Length: 533
Figure (cartoon, rainbow, N blue to C red):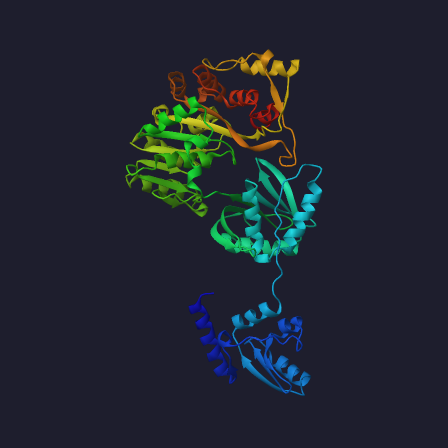
């Protein structure tokens, strides 16, 4: 509490004492002495009184404005052999004394770790015990701090019949870390609701955002930047918190893991002042990170960049960022986009194209002198194009507007220190050869008889054999064959036809990319099949 705020509280307490006809004591100017033989700590908390001075004949109690008359009478009767006097002190003054009578115990907030199958139950038990000791107002910050340390992307709070399960998504996989009681969860969900501006009693799904600083009881500072999604379930309010890292230096094209030919395509596209670039993939595939890296690269004094986001997830100096709230609906999103285009931007980022109106407006902007960047939910780059066609119908300028569709998925990266090599058997060789035979022209085809693959190993530091994630990508450009297909009636344009034509003209699919990364020892064949199919 600041000095001015404390002065204001003491002044208000003094006025209240005058109204009640009682003496007032300013404990900031009082020589604090402890008289531990008069009342126990439990009684001090219960009665909300402090013995300020005491001798053989007198006891002077400090009381608060919430101390009841019954307590005053009780104390007079209990200490009938003493002259008992009362003076009002402030709530902060009372708390200051109680920290001397009952100093807080040193809190050890044990670090959370993700254990292998053998040690999982023991780890969950230890973390659950730690969470029960964490101060109620620290629980949220502690979980976020630990999730950041583990490089988790999400925290899941899941209401079950007997308790609430807490899981972290690390490298794309969910790991249970603790179970907490419903009493503890009520405190956590209350803190979460206040910070994210959502209601714990709502019967509808809600979205919120938290960006603030917290100080743990240990003295550590924690920056919390979360998108919060809540939904009511049969046992209570479940929540998923998506973590965002605020460091702008991470948003660089060179940090995206682009291959040299992929980097060349991206740099060539963003050099052009117009066109639509779509980043495609499911939730959690790194679309937002890719978008922000593009924006950060384009963020120069010569460019005016405006973004429309629901919500604004990262704050970027030099960029005009406009939040689009979910309650406005998709029409509100499209209307804001039309308003933004009147502000003469060079680059526009649309957080997500969700409806036909936003799709059409984005295409028109791309054709009229703007570089438009956006995300789209689709299983592949070719599927994104056919879905866009379904949304906007026949449009002869469609093929001219889109410059690049980049689809991506994240797979776990093998830990180099523990991975174990093996030679594929004949059945797996046949599978791989069938995929290699579909590689586009210009991609070197590995000799299947010389291929070495890898399985994850294990160590105490890396129990699952994976460390971090890498992206599998495909980049669909508007080559002559693809453009010709897109000018056909929409009914004749299929996803498979578009993909075949794009591969024929040089596109490496996510499956192709995954096979090459598995052969290079960066991930496993099982990971590629799990994520891409």
